[in-house]
Length: 423
Image (cartoon, rainbow, N blue to C red; front, side, top):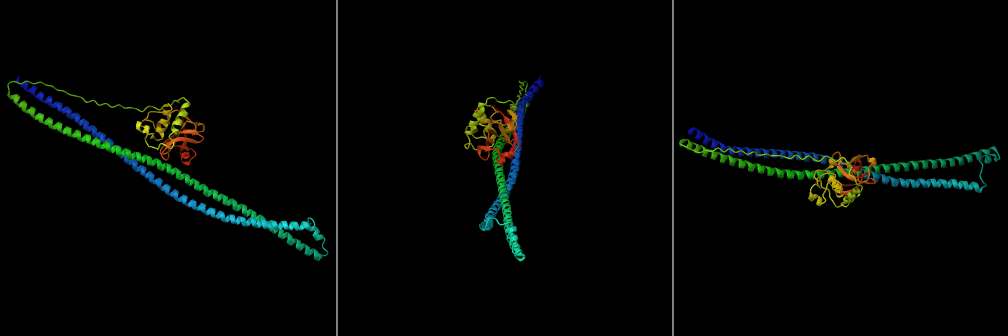
């Protein structure tokens, strides 16, 4: 009987100690979970840092292209100025050539008038036949030859000058057109590079914001882990003290004649669950209602020049209230204002929008269609086609604006991806 009571007492100690062991297990699990979250956050920060370095390297390359383009523009401007000076000099030469041509024309006209005044048109053969003697014939032939040769020389010089004049004018026109075309191409390239710089600056700003948030979250996780670790140490100390007390009680019970014991062993299970929320699949059906097109365009057009670009913006109620969007959230919002749902507020981007509605060819696109551009990635930018080669969009250079698809940057970035979401 005494042995049984001792067993019950020890069981009571073990059972009571077991409560702390379970608590310790949960504390360890919480600490492990926090450590996993810390590792994940460190990995996220590492990826952000890597993205920042890659982006900075890309921006360095773009800056080098900008510098090179500026140098080429400077050189081409110098060529334009040089060609203009050549043009001015050539104009002087042209004036002189025209003057020589006019002088020769006057000589020929004067000769023609003299002939007319002396009795109509003189036939050179008649002049020869009217000679009185062979010597007179020879003299007349030599005189006529001199006149004819002089006239022919004048005519040859006229022809030569006119041909040279035409050639020079054509060469000058061609040269001017060439240098001006080169200059326009370089200016277009400068515009395209500026769009790329603005895009990269927006992405870099967002990365820095994400880095700041991630570092703040990492600090909080470390604080939580430290708190859990302190709680775990305190629990272990309490468990140790209680175990020592129970051992002391067990010894006293073993010496007594009777004891009461009860075994209460409790356990608790911590159940953690996570909800895996899958983003909604893209709606491949066309949203009906032609009135929605004009309503969406009207809503979006009201923000032209009044809404600066915000990379990743437009996905919270505060951003929407401030009309702070990026390209995809702006398009989603504009159509939402017209009652057309293109996806959830927080989950809509160019990758989801490119699956909305139905695809149409670039030759068939109409007002209200979504047009996509390969900017920092494939289909990285989206806007609403307005017709006549223009589209409404929110871009990093100008914010909400109406741009021409013939602009060199947008022309090169447009690969014919068009989606019709309302008709």
